[in-house]
Image 1 (spheres, rainbow, N blue to C red):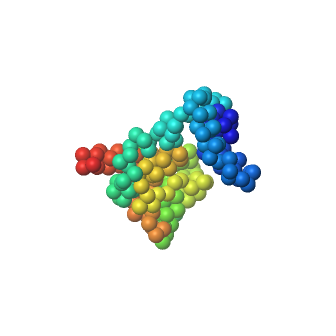
Image 2: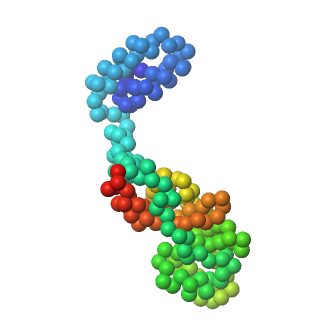
Image 3: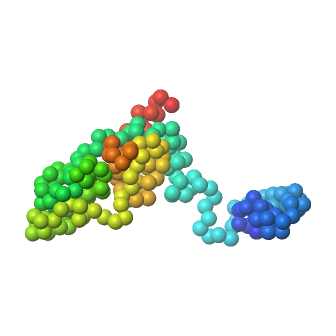
Length: 198
């Protein structure tokens, strides 16, 4: 316990693991002392080359430590109206004309107004002009589906989902209906507005 708990920087996990494997808790109290001394002696040394000292240095968790205020805000506080939206039956040629000035793309809805997917400008640009006159935008929707956010999701979780999917915005749904969209710039704006109040 002392050797591996110290060098792996996992003192609690190793103590519990050995106690469970042996079925005996009598060594737990002296193990705490031994592992504590071992951890103090080892310091920052580790057997894992890529192990980071703490979560604040991890690229995945960095935004949580850099923007703790985001955890107190929800997607509802920052989202914007869900525009533009286009029906899934729209032809690609017509969609290119409709979205000519829209750099972010559009939300695609079925005839009942339910969310179907997200159409990015790159998807439209990849379709030749000849096919655009007969091909509907529903055929361009990618698998797997893009991230979809709930209106009550904390902004730090929403930012993490956008970062993991490598997209700049995502639709916001409530009861299977699109109620808005959240862009990275909306998160920044909401953070700046909330910072003076907190």
